[in-house]
Length: 479
Image (cartoon, rainbow, N blue to C red; front, side, top):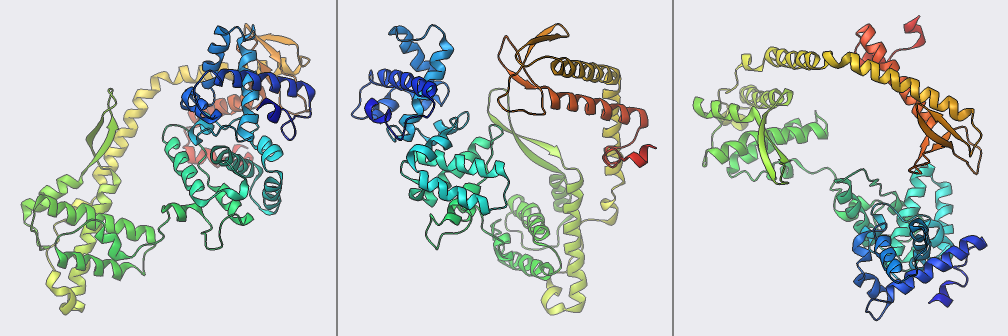
């Protein structure tokens, strides 16, 4: 295996990088050799490296190297060497990490370049040619190529061996990861492969169609049938009513109307009053329904991680749903005059009075909440103003000190020591490294954000204008 992976096309151009790869590859294979298995993939799975993720697996290998006396004196050197050594094993299709491993916590560094150089140069060249003709931005294209390289690493084969099912699996995994933290869920990589002609001619142009997530606009019958209304005549009435409105409202409003009338109104009534079949509601039934619609259920996790349901009052939307039902009754009454044969049988007194639609109480409640927030936050306003002013001053001093320092030299601001970063390529930004943690920070946007945070707070508190007015401020407004 060493002989194969230390020969072209896996050899790096830089001799130093190739030496580090050789050392790292040897250490990875020596570690995996301690586990049972007929293939290197078997040993990889048995070792627990795949379950650990693409960072933590190195800690497992490093501990064994230390116990076997094969580790560097500096732990960080082993960490870097193992990362360099795993790349030829992946690109050479010796091991196939899972998609979750390849994406946790992030895509393996330079995986795209390694796959394009040693696995499928022609396939990636064709992808780059498609990218060149596409108007998408560079970040989106780079992310798509990275996803394609990830699929190849997990599934094996070349670019043209990727299937629509592989893309669906990737999209589903990204969507599940997005619930736990910020993850780019773009499916542009599917469109790139489709434009390249990887999939059959009948394949849809977007992965949402393949995965079943894109069902398009559904009919009014399907909108209402989602709520499984037991009374067939009422179900047909709601369908006919929505069909009358279909040409005068947009699709989103139509779906909202179906939810309000089908789910919140009639399904709720059938749930609490089985067998109901008339729009003529008794006063107690109407009053109980209005109390229920005034509240909504919210699911959340408690301290022990269990999902619990709590009821909270609806705000503006509660009145909107009441307005839908009131319009429904008033429309039926009006239509019954024009066409009594079709609509007359359903005409009934509206259970929602006009005074119940007044938004005065809702507006007063909203103002009360706003005033309460102001009372809570006003005492800490001086602390906020003082803190952002201090941060603005420190950020400006840090940037000025870094600009006056030669790259590679250290400087001190506010009692903290920094080292001016050395960049291979000239850049307008100023970077600095923390000598203790090694963390690099971009001082230029930090100073920019600190200044405008201070400017925003000062303008708001000194003028009393609203946020909407702040975003529209211009030089003419100031002078």
